Each structure stands twice: as structure tokens, then as C-alpha cells.
Image (cartoon, rainbow, N blue to C red; front, side, top):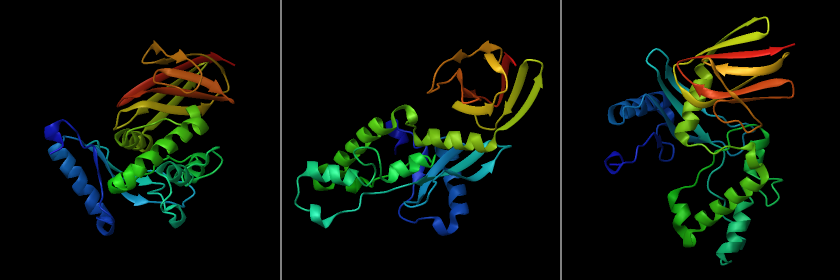
Length: 257
């Protein structure tokens, strides 16, 4: 149905605990459906919620590197806001501010999303559609407040991504292999991955004063964080490189000690 109206479903959300007891079979079924309907060999699903775990990361559930197939479980770090009986009957604007506190405080000093940010987790949270619509669309007002606070508190320390991009990045980071060879003032990095990935970012300790970084012989741009594709920077004794990862990618780092 979605495909017929021009919307590609890159993954699936799972109703309640559907598939949890047979998750391996469920992941395989999701992959086969995506291959048949959308021609996708890399997909994802929502099933698990970890509202209290210290670190929340995606999980590579199924992978076949030879066929370049993978399924990623994207775990949510927090769900719908918890209702407070004391707020019943209060104005929508007041409710939105109070419920947003569960995710992130007005000053950015607390809340579940702040915990995830400080832990270096993927900041993933979700709402059920009916919770978004009820009570004069209170869920939308909460979401707008949360997003605004995240922008003020985290700034360029976060990057918004589609779920398909999260799955792509996680699969690539879990499967990529790197060979390094250093000679004189040049470091050669050979990356191989069954999954291409846009804006793939790596960091490594650097003992040299880096002067130029090249991808496939083309010079990359030296800049300041946050990095975008085809750029690099040095910070705190480390070299950071952001590039579009192909099945095979060559990076050359040149400098002097």
C-alpha cells in the first residue's frame, strides 16, 4: 500500500511484543519481505524499549556479508510520556512543558534523553500515534518542546538521522574491516565493507602533523566539527575523517612528525 503511494517502508515497527519470542525468525521474515516488496537487502525493525539502561545502541540481528544482507534491531531509549493525574484538566501548554521534562529538562540538565546523550548512546525515542493525537494533539506539543530543548542543549553535538540511516551506519560500522600501512610520512587506510554508508566517520590517534587527507586520490576538506562527508579535522591528538564508505575505499593521510 505504501509503495503504491510513493512511500518506501525501509523497515517495520512491531505491534507490542510481536515476534519477541521468535526474534530470529521474525528478523528473517522482515528481510525476506523487504527483498520481495522493496528490493532492499538492508532493513531494520522496532521491537525493544530500554527506558532505564545506561547505554542504548542498535543491534545487528542478522547478517550475511557475502550476500550483503542485514537486519538491524533499533532499540528505543524512551517511549510515551507517563501521565501525571495532577495535570488532568490543566491547559495543554502547561501539560506539554511538564511532560517534556521527562525527556529533557528546560535547562538541559536532566531527563532521559540527557542520560542517553551523556552515555554516548543513540538518542532514540518513540511515541504511539494515538498518544500523539489524543487530548487535542498533546503528544505533538510535547514533541515540539522536546525537539526545541534538544537543539538548545545539545546543539551540534547531535545529528538527526532517519531510521534507515541508523541501520545503514550501524551495519557498516559492525562489518567494516580496515587495513593500515604506514611508510615515511604517509598512512594508507584500506576500508572494505559489505554495506556502503554515507558520512561514515572514523577516528584514530595521530602522531604526525597531518597536512593532507585524500580519498581515492582526491583531496578532502580540512574543517572544524561537526564534520560532513569528504572532510577531516584533528582534535585532542586524534584524526577524524568523514567520508562516504564504498565497498572498498582508500584513504591516504600525509604529514610530518
